[in-house]
Length: 102
Image (cartoon, rainbow, N blue to C red):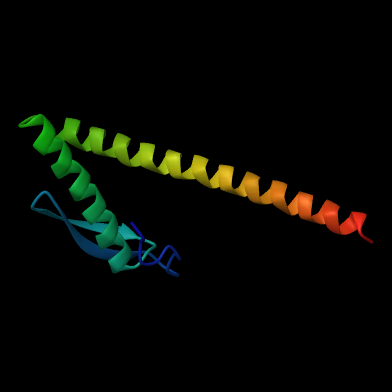
């Protein structure tokens, strides 16, 4: 999921979001569109868990959704570190090749 803007606004902004049919007012440094996309992600994760588990405490659903989202974030970070490492290795090999031909 590509979020619309990860650049913080100059000040905190209040916006309404909807999760599982309930409306919440949240304050965020990010624009309303960003907050809405984040809420959509949380809502989607919570609904997916509810579909799999059936009725259970909303707190449990929220915690499981948070764990799923955190797991996705950590996987993305690890993949990014791997990509950065591979790029660095390739750049070093290219630099060595260039230096050996000078």
